[in-house]
Length: 463
Ligand SMILES: C[S@@+](CC[C@H](N)C(=O)[O-])C[C@H]1O[C@@H](n2cnc3c(N)ncnc32)[C@H](O)[C@@H]1O
Ligand code: SF4
Image 1 (tube, rainbow, N blue to C red):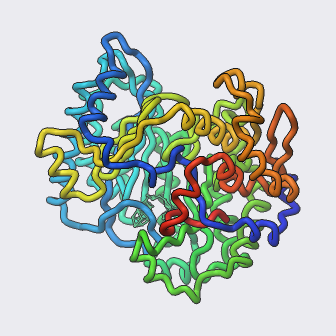
Image 2: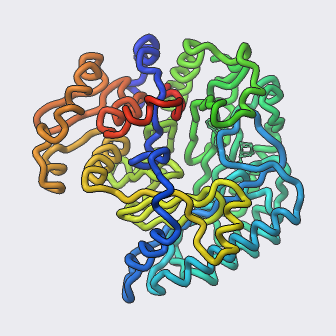
Image 3: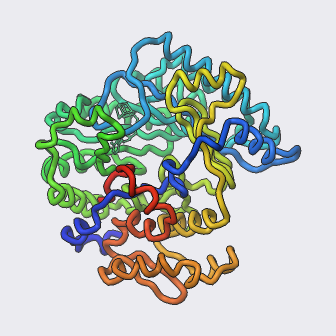
């Protein structure tokens, strides 16, 4: 997989650097609307849980709390050290879990659980065990369920990881971002390398089988040389997966990002050089590029799922579990079934108010149209397989691809001329630098982009 990247054309990437969605869903979250209500979501849960339903479940739990604010943070989080406030949230979360679980057919098993944030490990070990027990008493878990958690190595002790292992967690994702002190100071996230190493070692000792490390490029003071040191340091840990996120600078959505001094940010050219170095170094060191910021060792299941075309994309990025209904719990969490998306209240008081009123916490949602299903599938396959088998799409949806996607194919023409895709009558292949521009390619198949981009900025930049 490494080869084609050795000729990254920085000028070409720059040409395609524009705002665009990350396609963790299609349609994308800005299209969710309040006319889809908590009542609609409840009806959909009932409609998809007829007695005897046995299809698999995926659960997401959002823990929004953090100890301090990282200035770059784009997540939905709240900084607090008030344990009572966290206890209160956990009480509501458990109410929501019970309320939803009562509607779910008892024969369905959880095959995937993810705790994200914010920072799930900002909970105490006791709070984590209590929450895990609530989930296990409300749902039936498959014995081989993939249970993953996002971990911030700062202010973590071994007991946190022991509690997670005891609660059945077997995968983790650790936030590191960058090892350099100058970068860490500029973003208010001091995290000595020794701390990250210690937490990684504990996790291996406790048997976590798949460990991902999050890094970020595009942060203040980063240079090719400084980030190379970080990447070298991480390769030495030998994690199963590495995510190298492009810093999404969206101060209109996250005003605290204004605390990052613009003049210290790498220029777009420098950022691309950092990306180029990162991809070359990781692929030369035995990691496979999965797509959209993600790298994995060849024996990791993400890489294997890529090879067997069973890779899938969801709100947590790439996944190997296709098709399970996703139930999201907590402030801002998103649920996704075959036909609907439903998102919970994004502010704590609204989340609490809905649950106090005896309702579910949905505030916006979306019901998929037949056209959404076709486009979602096409975008998903392109982003996961890096190619599209046109005959299989025609059979699956009963369409003539060239007619149905006439506008999309026209939009792809300049990308084909630039060597990002190869289009023939029976397949579309993403080639060379196109693999770094998956968002731009997917955008050609998005029916809503014009409508969203017109009024105000919504998305981060694609490169
Ligand atoms: C919820 S955090 C991970 C857990 C924990 N809170 C931590 O920071 O270690 C998820 C990841 O999102 C990434 N992230 C946060 N803000 C981002 C932004 N503005 N642009 C790109 N990635 C971002 C970071 O790499 C971070 O590790
Ligand atoms: S990056 Fe992680 S620790 Fe930092 S503020 Fe965001 S969610 Fe919290």
